[in-house]
Length: 186
Image (cartoon, rainbow, N blue to C red; front, top):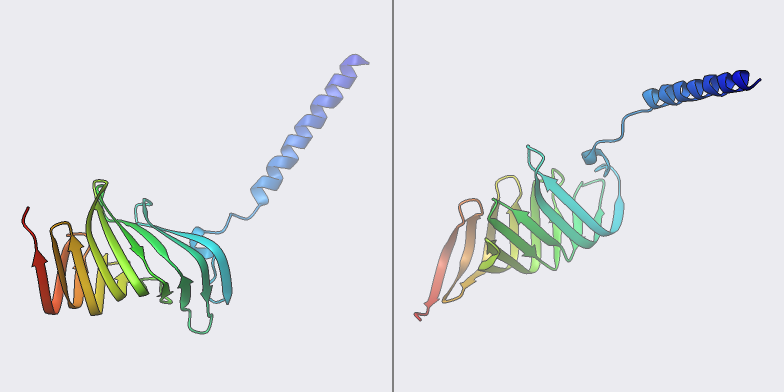
């Protein structure tokens, strides 16, 4: 009797494991990360974190916001008080802050509005600070653009002008017109 009982338990366990294996094999794959938020739906999300990855899978940026919403008809997202951390190299990263932002339907551009501040951090040390009323951040090109008044500051100097183009990869900033500067020697 004891041998028959142990044999019955063994057969039962084998059948249970086989049925589990069959169920797992028939399960549909999990959704892709990009497919989680459907751009064809209206939504309103609270306390959100969005991460960007480059083509190699390395984390490139992080968007944190208390609220983000989207209108499905236009595909444009609206963000309240965005805080963006953006990595351009091992040593260089940027922190972008604003009162509000819009994200274009193709997710390649962020339009930042109201008290925009961009802090450059190189090797853990604060570098240049950009201040503007509005700024366009091109995520694919790692570029910043503005048509309005822009102020660039760093310890020892400050510049201001109308309009700006900046390449975050090369750390080159260009004020387009009406440029004024102040430089202090130590």
